[in-house]
Image 1: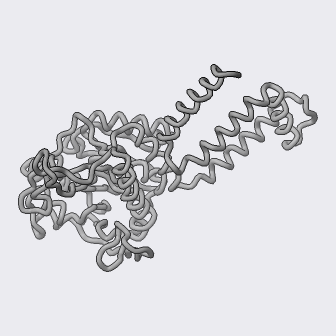
Image 2: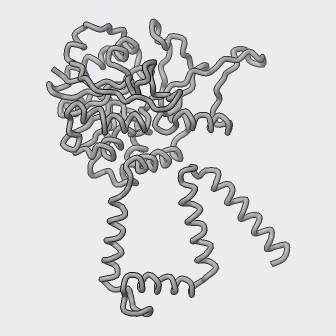
Image 3: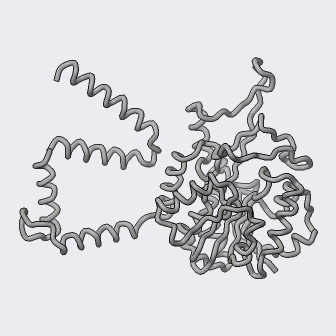
Amino acid sequence: KGPDGMALVMAAVAELEKIMEEIPPDFMPQFEEAAKSMISAFKDGAAGGKDAVEEDHRKEGCASAGHAHDETCNSGRETKKRKKSDKIDPFQQMKDIQYWLRLKVPAEAVVPSETIVYGHEGTDFADYTAQNTQSVDGFLYEEDDIDDLCEAGKLARSFCTACGSRTIKDLNFISHSLSLRELEFIFTNALPAANVDVSKSCVVDVGSRLGAVVYAACVFGKAKEAVGVEMNSELCKVQEEALKVFGLQGTARVVCDDVCKQLEVIAKANVVVLHNVFQFFLEKKEAANAWASLMAALAPGTTVVTCPPIEEQLASSCDVQKGTALFKKLKAVEIEYPETTVENDEYADEDGNLFSNICVYTVV
C-alpha cells in the first residue's frame, strides 16, 4: 500500500511490457491465459490451490475431496496429456520451432563466423554487394514479418549510395532458407506427388543452416530419418539444441562437416534437398568442384528437390550451363502446383501458380 507499493506495481508493469514486446503475436492468447492463471493462483493462495486440486479430483471421479493423488488419477491425467499432444497441428509445431529460433539468432540469421560471397557475374545477382544486400532467413520471417521488423527499426529497406546524402536505393533481400509454406508444400504435396513415401525415407538437406528442412521432414513428412549437413559449427550447435528441445533427436541428426567430405551420407539418402546450396557461400571454382562431387555421389533412384531449378543453381553458382554431364543424371518429375487464391501472393508466379520455383527430379 502507499507510494512504495505503487512504485513496485509500476516497476512490475514496466518489466511486463518488456517481456510482452518479445512475445510473438500468435503466442499472445497463451500468454494472456497463463498470466491470468498465475494471478488467480497468487490471489487465492494455498486455499485456492487446494480447491483446484479437489475440483480436478471431483471431475476425474475421485472418491473424495481429501483423496490423495493415487496411481489411477495420475494415469488418467497422463492419458489426457497424451491425447492432447496427439492432436498437435504440424504447422503450429513448425511455428513453435520458428519462434524459438527467432530468439536464438539475429533477423538475418547470418552468424559472425560465416562469409557471404558476392560478385556473381553473368547472373541476376551480379550487382549484389555487401552494401546493397540484406539477408533475411525465409524460414524465420516472411514478407509481413519483414515489414514488422522494418517498422520496428530492426531491419532497413534502403541504403544510402552516398553517405550523408538523400540519394537512397532499395536493398536487395535474399534468403538462405526455405519458408514454412514452401516446406509444407514439399513434404505434403510435391514428394507424395512424386510417389515418395517420406515416412520410409532418409531425407538429407545439404547446407542445413538452422535446420528448417530437417524439422519439416520430421514434422510434416514423418521421415524415417532426417540428416542436416552443415559446415558452420555455430549453426550446427543451434540445430542440435533445437532437436533436443523439440524432441526430434531420435529421428534427426546434424553432420557438422563439408558435404564433399560426407559423400557417403549423400549416397545413402532417399531424398536430397538442395536449396541454393553453394551460391553466396563458395567461389565459382569451388562450387563447380562441389557440384561435381555431389552429383557423382547421388545413387540412382534418389529423389532430388531443388529450389530454384537445378539449371538456375548451376548457372548462377558455377557457370555450368544446361546440357552438360551434370544435368544428365537428373530426370524432371512432373508435379502439379496449386493456384493462388489471393492477390499479390509472394509465392505465386506470373500464371498464378504457387511454389513453381521448387522442382523435383529423379537420379537416373
